[in-house]
Structures are given as C-alpha cells and as structure tokens.
Image 1 (cartoon, one colour):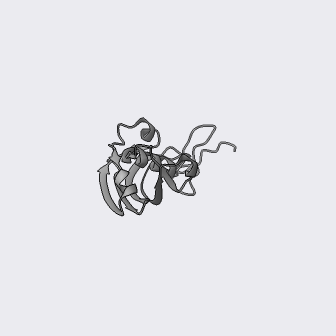
Image 2: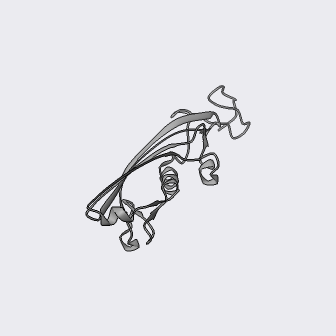
Image 3: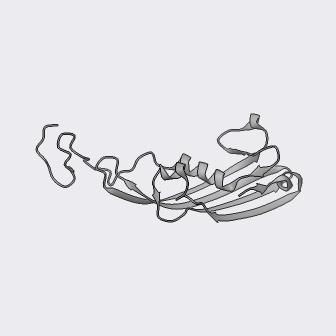
Length: 150
C-alpha cells in the first residue's frame, strides 16, 4: 500500500486517516519476533497545515512466544502510539521523523512494520522470578528442584 502525501505539503489544511490490518503472518521479519494470533491493527492519522505534516500512529497486536529462561509459552499484548513529523529532507531525519521519498510516497505497511520491530520486547519471561532450566539436567526449576549443583 502506498499513499501520495504531496497535498499534505502544499495545501493549507490536509487530513487523512488510514486503518488496516498488517499481514504479520506472512512477513519474515515479524515472524522472527513472535507468533501473531491475528494480524496487528494499525491506524495512521496524517494531517498537514502550511507545509508541516504530522503523523499519529496507533498499533495494537497480540503475540505468543516462549520464555527466555524456561521455554514456557508466553502471550501478551502490545500497544504502540507515536506522533512523528513527516519530512522529505534526509538531512533533517531523526527518531521523531518519518522520511518519505522525493515523490511524496508514504508506505503505511512498511512504517507500521518498522515501529513494531523497534518497540517489540527483546525477550520474554513467563514471570519476573522465573528460575529457568537447569544447565546440567534441563529440568524446569519453576516446577521442581533437581538437586544438581549450581
């Protein structure tokens, strides 16, 4: 999907709302993060006034993965909200901007994917006090003590 934002930069007032579901199940990059029960819900609100273009985004998703310590299944929800300025000049790019091409094309699915990757947890725990697996016998220490030496 692509949206031409040229009008947002040249008109006195511009508003556009984009709602869609991101196809996470078919994306290789997102599938390395976790499994998604259903596709993430994405909403972009783009508005411009006198050449200043802003983009508000909201992304809601549910995921399943495994605990980094004991490999127990873990599920969770992630809610991502951001407000960033849309720019065409690569010299002004920073973490609070969205850089679009010279032809004013904005790719909402690509932007949503990037936001998910940046905000997604690096690892998951089933509980803050998870004891993990024994490195000697592989026993789940949350369920029983194995007696192996630490």
